[in-house]
Length: 71
Image 1 (cartoon, rainbow, N blue to C red):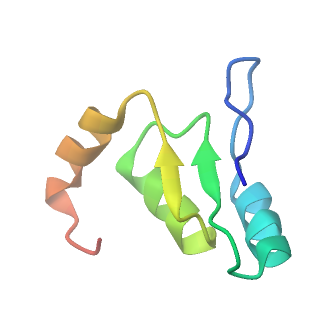
Image 2: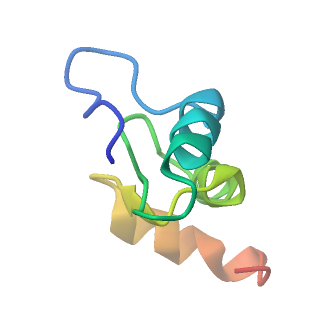
């Protein structure tokens, strides 16, 4: 399952990901997309149940990970 793309404003929220994760019951993955701009945003989505992240700034997110080795 995938959240909104973020093209019309908004995008994934932690609440959205938790809801989709609960509905899917681990049977299918959940992709968080739209509005994910920082490493911290990505971590919050993963902690909420996202198995994939969709972000146009993925390279910058990964490069900013250096200061946090949790994931």
